[in-house]
Image 1 (cartoon, rainbow, N blue to C red):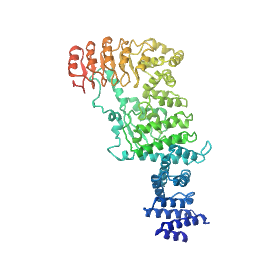
Image 2 (tube, one colour):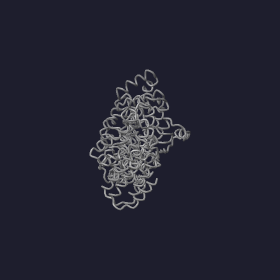
Image 3 (cartoon, rainbow, N blue to C red):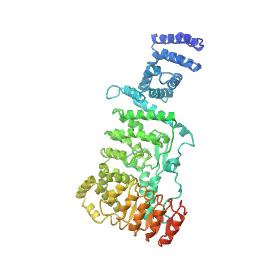
Image 4 (cartoon, rainbow, N blue to C red):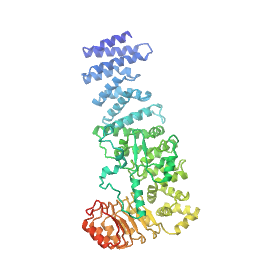
Length: 615
């Protein structure tokens, strides 16, 4: 201790740095050769050097590297103290390509990842590890160097011999990703508010109408359809930085009752996990160049971690209570990159892995909801959703409760994917019919038509009919009177569905929020009983209107809200004398055309012309 005190006094008043460096080397040699088995013998020199560096900020880069090399032997078996970590962080940021980073810092970081038990007690160790990995990423080979480092931490066998490495790496990744969004989190102006998350689509497309976009006092059937569509698009989402909470406002008393009966402390079941599904678009978040590099690096590390079979169960468990801030989940780039990790969970046959896709408890949101159609992170037409349902179906979830939850929340995506030939979704629809999940006859008939539109669906439905004769009786009664196509359906989807059976009884058709165009008019004119048609927010244009006006003379209710129609197509509606309700909200309708239509349509009683020239 006397020697330690002597060196401490000598180094507290440095004169020439060559002398100081020599004294540091002597101090390190003394600590390494001491016969005493005391951690303080090794830690004390590090504390002395740490204080020396913090009090002398004018050292050259060469001085820095010389000191780091001098104390390197002590770092092989000791964590660096906080001030020294800060010094190392600075060196990693300023000289990421320095050989000191590779030769000296690598074993130090390896030791931290293998032995650290709690970054909460020593956050600067975590920060140093984070800066070290970023420095590796700055090397010529970039992420390949990081990948080799991660692989070296896993060990040569299929089972990682170091149980602390994975949770420590995940902790570093989560902290780094959080730092990317800190500016948005701390800024009231930039951080997405609850209202913005709830109505995320409005900021992107700057929609003008604030009032409900529906027919004024129109028929109850069409209003109920539009209300359902509006509700599905504008479900409210409440998010915290640790996990996502979803609050769904429902009018359905059955759903309210089911939600009320769930205890916060109970284990989640599949129906509770599927009950909540947010529908909001991602926010427009622009990160700085540095934050963008950090995000790319650490999301890539999470992807690397998910590739190791033995790490995947623990990784899925660590990410099950969603640990990312709402700003990250509202960022399209982040959720798109993280999708790879979720896919790896969905592909894993082990229940302990894929069950982590569900929420940690009832009432909380999980990855299943976020990446399902309508979820904030969904960027496809349901392919990942189908994979998740497939793996869950193959586990222990093939129950009536599972099917009920899908029917209540995800029937549209299930039908659309089945219409496109997805075998899992075909099986789901067949089971819904077999278990009598669907009470509404029109919906049952639509499911039957969907199944019969593909070869695999037709085969499975025929097998089902052999078991249940009453389905054949239902089909003999004719097609449905009402039909609603799922969002994102295309002209081809509609054609495939309408060609699968008889729709001579169809009176009410909703194509709202689908991707149909004027090309679908060729199929619509083959529906002789059609009285109500909803084309809200589609790409249906003038050419389609002209074709409809020539054939669908019995049409009574038409919704063209937010379609690209113009006066050229709207004028053709004057031949549809049965029209009694017409919605032209947010179209290119002119005042003259509006007056002309009013004069030529004697039965027209309800009209919506808001946000047009005629308003």
